[in-house]
Image 1 (cartoon, rainbow, N blue to C red):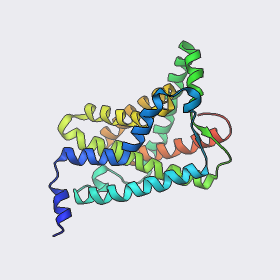
Image 2 (cartoon, helix red, strand yellow):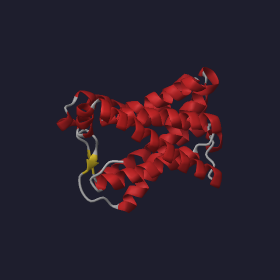
Image 3 (tube, helix red, strand yellow):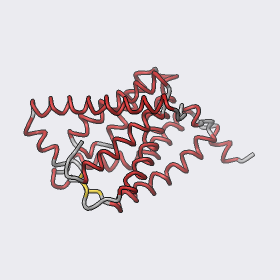
Image 4 (spheres, rainbow, N blue to C red):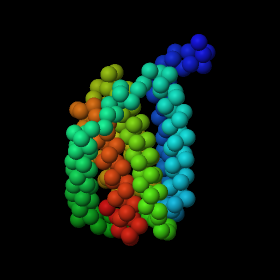
Length: 233
């Protein structure tokens, strides 16, 4: 018997949770929090093909360690509810539409109530620094959508729900999701919080992870496409 595997199996559930979240999102949360005190000019984010490649390599490398660790701990994709079929794909498209509806409604309300603040917030939103390769955009969107939803939604909610209840699990998942998106400023809060709660609720009710992944992938692709054309979704 492998001593390292045996040690990993004996770890308390809290240590497992801390390791997974720290490894998956720790660096992103740290850099995102550091961006909060920056001025809009300092915090203006840009991305290009090199940045997309960096995200791909980083998330794939993280995934290798996390999948290895969680398999030893007894986690499987089936346990997380990752099955691809027509029903879950259609639910993913519906989830995409509802999420965009929420975003538009919340941002219109905020723009009406706080127009100056929303204009300043828009200046912080990441934008492309040059022409993007659409094949790279699609690949990065697929990897990022799978990575985020498997760990911030599937794992977090599945791990917390049995011991703390559904809404605690949804709230923790949403808080983690928000923390690594703080660099987006107020617009990030207005979009990420509704998305996190909605995604968490859908997953908790259905135990289907693919709708979340598909909706996230499509949102990333649409976001990159609109960003590359000078607009935001």
